[in-house]
Amino acid sequence: MPIKTKIDIADLVRENIRQLTPYSSARSEFKGRAEVLLDANESPFETGMNRYPDPLATRVRERLGELKGIDPSRIVLGNGSDELVDYVTRIFCRPGVDNVICMPPTFGMYIVAADINDVECRKILLTPDFTLPVAEIEAAIDENSRVLWICSPNNPSGNLMPKEQVEYLLDIFPGIVVIDEAYIEYLPEESFIPRLDEFPNLIVTQTLSKAWGLAGIRLGAAYASAYIISLMQAVKMPYNVNVLTQQRAMEALSDEAGMKSRIDFLVQARKQMAKDLAELDFVQKVFPSVTNYLLVKFNDARMIYDYLLSKGIVVRDRSSQPNCENCLRITIGTQEENRLLLDALVGFRES
Ligand SMILES: *Cc1c(COP(=O)(O)O)cnc(C)c1O
Image (cartoon, rainbow, N blue to C red; front, side, top):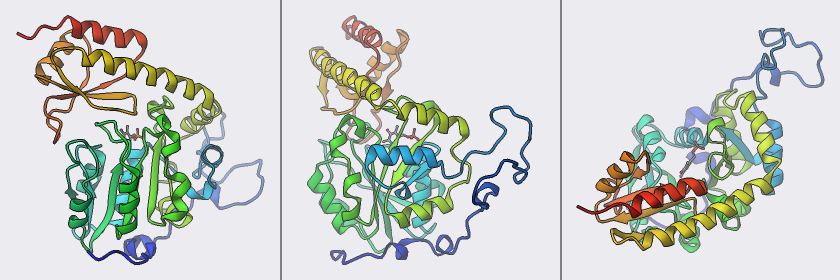
């Protein structure tokens, strides 16, 4: 592939999406103030929830804009960032024609979204120390490559992708580059959001599911150019972020200090856990992590997994993933949970 000159993002968009007339919801069709709402066939009887949500989730986007230092016109919200993965695939990839590239071992949704949309996912393995195989990625690119998924910090390995590698790929990739920053709150200074203006083909996704502690409400966000965001707003289901989710998000986002203090605890606990695990003689390696989980290589991961389960402790077996032979992914829990895990492992004897 020749080095890309300047790409026109509109050329990457599927024709039917470029032509799309988005659904226009009742509440977005009037401007101004209204006391009497007889426009949406809702029930008039107050339940606290009888009205449809704001389809643009305006207040949440304004609050995220303040926190991230970016205009709300450059933010779109999804029912979890999972949903945004699907939107990106649908907007930029022609089924049966285009391809996306992802780098296993990584988050599984990029492949699932490609499969659902009948889009080829080219899988280029991360290096054994889980950095980006830049030359191999470059070799896999062709004229139908539309999306490159970079998970950083990467799940399940826990490391950040080297910045120079990411910058290089942003420069040469002839399509959209998505950086999945689901764990970026652990290293906020490494976010690519402040660099969106440098890279018109960049989309950054984040989530309230991890550091913000709200996996249950399903709220993810994508940050990109106003043009890319307008495409995502047009494609998304109008009421994909419900009233309860918007309310809980506003509460959580008003307490950034609380989130940061929980991060401080988890980072400390992760460091301690990494040290303690490394001392066990049936642990081969604890991979370096900047997140709230550790990828740990055991002599026999399945045996440890089953043993822990017999003690009522469930971790994630990642052994079947490339370069993750005999690896379990262990999430950092409360002090009590971490102690239970370590006590159980200390009591384990290889037979
Ligand atoms: C957990 C996780 C997500 C979050 O998905 P949500 O749908 O927002 O809960 C996204 N990407 C990665 C890499 C994750 O580990």
